[in-house]
Structures are given as C-alpha cells and as structure tokens.
Image 1 (spheres, rainbow, N blue to C red):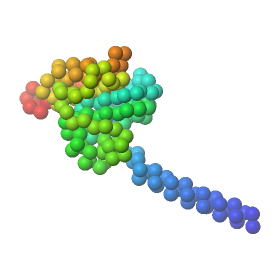
Image 2: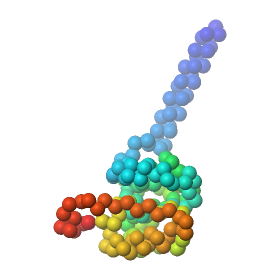
Image 3: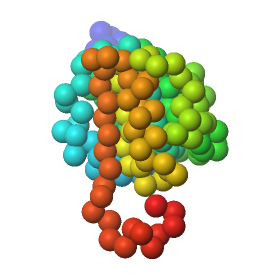
Image 4: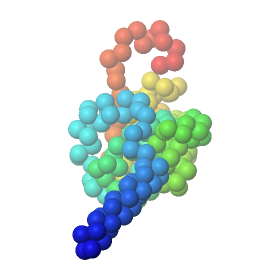
Length: 173
C-alpha cells in the first residue's frame, strides 16, 4: 500500500512538473529568431565585460530581436529602453524578443531615428549600438547622440561590420 501511494505521488509530481514546464515555455519562448545577434555577442566575448547589474540601458537600432536579450543572460538590467525607427512595427513580429518584452511590459520602446534620440543627456548606464551605422543618414550624429546619453563612467558598446564589399553601390547602407 505504501509503494502504491508513493508511486501515485511520484506520478502526480511528474504530471505537475510537465504542466509547469509547458506553461513556462508558453510564457517566455526560449528560441527567439535572430538577426546576427549571437554573432555580435561572440565578437564582444558574450558581453562578459559588463557588470552583473545595470540600472538603465538603451539599445539604439534594436531591430526585432535585439542584443539586449543576450546581455540579459549575463546581467540584470532594471530599466530597458529599445529604440528603432521601426520599433512599433517590430512589436508585431510575434516571434521576436522585442514583441514579447513589450507585451509583457519588460521594456520601453522608442521609435525615433538614431540621429534624434529624445532622451536627456547622461542618463543611461549602458548604451548599445550594434550594426546601426550602415542604416542611418548621418553616422557621426548617431555616435554623438549615443555618447551624449551615456552617463559619465557609463558603457557605450558600438559594433559595426566594415568589411562588406561594394557598400558604396548599395543605397540602403
């Protein structure tokens, strides 16, 4: 009788654990689509140089999949802002992290161009701008804006692939 009761408890426990795992997977998918974000993370040593806790971050040109989601694997960020002129459109991509984070009120989104960041100076502890400068009208202005909103002693992460061939003939870059 004791063995039967123990088996039932173990079986019930197994059912509950499986159910909770299914709920967790629905709440926060583990496999996000990607737009070279893992490639960039490798170039920055998986962001190991960042502190474990960051108060305020801004990702400029976040795209639908963001680099912030990979940084969150290493660091806690208390206030996250993701900025991209197409951010409100990216929220409609149900398989993107930006969409999930926005729906679950984990982030603020901003849709201003990188040249016209609307935030006060010296406000963000971390500013991320990866693979952005080839998508803007004025790269120098974007860099100046990113430096302006980064706090003194804050961290500004800029990544830009400059190895592309025939870029001058490509009017989109």
